[in-house]
Image 1: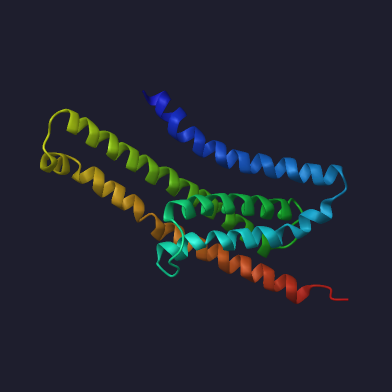
Image 2: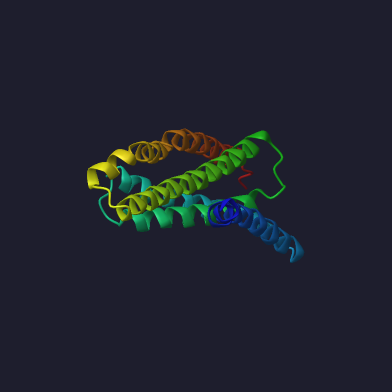
Amino acid sequence: MKSSLIIKEVLPFLAMFGLLILATIITDAQLHQFDLVWIGRWLGIPGTILILLSFFYSLRKRKIVRFGDPKALLSLHEVLTWIGSLMILVHAGIHIYTILPWMALIAMLINVISGMTGTYLLGRSRRLLAEKKEIYSLQGMSEKEIKKNLFWDATTCDLMRRWRTVHLPITWAFAVLGITHILSVLLFWRWK
């Protein structure tokens, strides 16, 4: 039972993060092999744009924008953030010579891990809640009894939704460090 739980729920989480790191290493190695390292320097721009586009989900969730299906926008948020993070990781490579870009990169990785963790935990809570509800229903419990038995599980699921209170400050820290990095690049750029 425990091994199937790990295979079903933990491995996909680890695989997505591992794939991000592996894709970064392979892409960076390919750029070096074909003497195209200069492309990596410019990948920070489209990577940042993709991450910014992923925020349409947050805007929709907060009802700042009214268009789009929230579930579809959440999936798009996850995909755009993953691809944008990949581009920024390749952009960073091992070529960072100052502390500000390193801090922005670490904040981004923590933010990605936080987002993936929240997605994993919330999905797991919802699945377990649905499974227990079905089991109680098959046992012939009334709707009132089911709600009573699921109270603490539903509370846990609600707490998982509040995980965003942790994810949001991490996102802001990444945003501030990323913007500061971008401004410092523009400020110290060798304009010729």
